[in-house]
Amino acid sequence: MRRSVFGALLFIMASMVAFGQAATPTDAGQDHKDLQELNRNAVQDKQDARSDVNDLRQDKTNMRTAVHDGDKAAASKDSKDIHQDQRALNQDKRDITRDKQRARQIRANSPAMGPRGGHR
Image: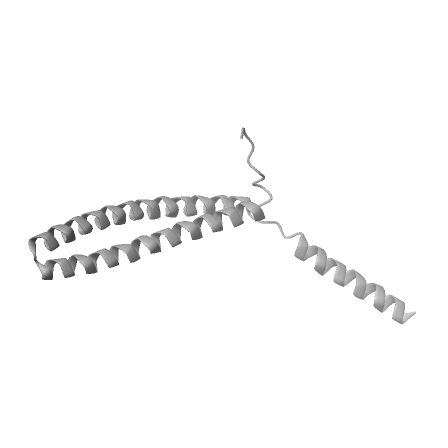
């Protein structure tokens, strides 16, 4: 008798723990705030990327001019600037990709944010 009561009690406790873990509600408001923050970050990263592209173009133009004029020191400096701008651009692209992945993950895991409707 004690064994069956203990077994039933253990089963009930395990069920409650399992149900409690599966039924923890997510805060839809927090998900929305996270998405807004990710969108702001993505917009900032895109602006940074555009700025880096413009800097890259300017540095390439400066380097071409320096090479044409025979100024090796300026060409070397511009070459270093080009590599630095390229690294910054690559980092911005990685940040944009990471923000998109996080946003996709939040949307997929949030029950309040179902699939978006609309026309294709």
